[in-house]
Image 1 (tube, rainbow, N blue to C red):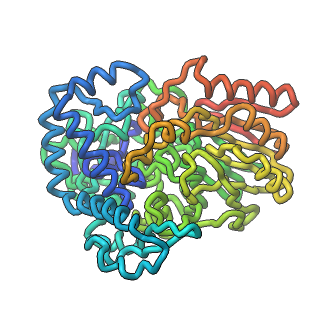
Image 2: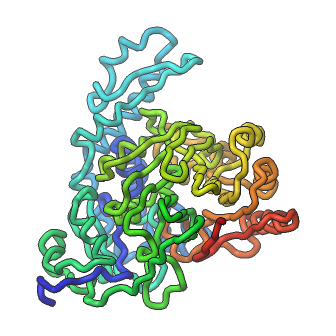
Image 3: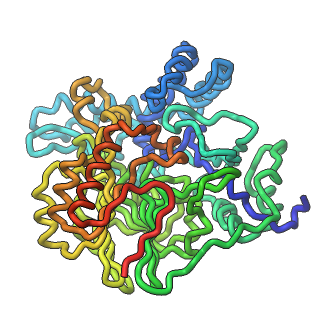
Length: 528
């Protein structure tokens, strides 16, 4: 293929953001949390696989172990994992030392007795000196606050560890991303470029508008042996975009991804866009999105709601990205605003609880979001209330109605809700599944099992519905679509508790005269 030939990115090419060859999600990019995951998860998991690979292989023969701490490769890949382990220790040694410094600082603060913390500053580990503030809470328990921006402006922010994996998909299956790195294989090519690189925008634009092939050959820093032409085609995609002429249209793309549109404005919530490949089921994809997206709103900082893979491919289209405000400086709760700006999103707005962003014909309001974070002090979460052309939609994500009085208070503020979208993954993983690497002391098992990443069950969800009194109720964010297992590891059956509980809610809503459905695959909803 001639380098000057205009080409399109094939619709079945996934662009996976990678950090040290592990699938990148926000906690792998904020430097302090990245350090904890590398030291306390990646290094330990790869070491375990190298020492006893058959344990991992045998464990993953059981479907229920898919999301567990097991590397999903055959025994023959031990040398590759060993090489990656050694490379990680060598190239991320300072981050591993940073994780050790955080552990040492936790131990140091146990000596605080309620007196002045000033004498302890001289004993703060060197990697953290000048980058943390030592503080007490109201109960005289000492902890530290990170100056997170300083970490991004230091050598701890590893742009050199970032790359993009171009993967040709022949189906929906991809290995679960939290427990296995990406190793070289025929369908995967590594582009050694940082996430902020403008060339990523050019790649994303090429999904719908042709670009010269030579642009990608020259700029993507792929290995010389890479068959670049395999990822691009001269065939134009089939146009799919249908503009909205009147009223409000909501399109469900899968999981928690909703596109709300009027003639004047578009709002995309928790973007997770599936790919089209040979044999793919009917689905909305990139060509179904507007060329310019007025607002992207993110509900909370979990890997299935802040999917960097999709966000980076939409960066050139997004005018404003709206995130929940963080508490600032918490190891357990890194700032989405800081992260997204680091990744090249120029206009990022962080909304405090009950703060409203106005736009032509409507507004976005951040509502309090309880639960689904294992009782940890995570502030970066909000249910978004979107008012558009006289309609009101609540994107409640994985909110868990653990305190019903919250919705009494909200009902006094928010009236006339037309549609509620609510996640009901009500079993949820234990706290350690996602947050374990951030702890510097072992988590007690009974605490780990009781503090889960769960949403509302039938009783809680119905109570929320009865208090807000919407006209339509949709269960979403269940992770059931086949293209989602790489971030969710979920494999439901009809007997699975979340399916049973959500079915009960849908049936009860219908009995009460409320339009209701558990969403799966593409769905279009019209309002007025």
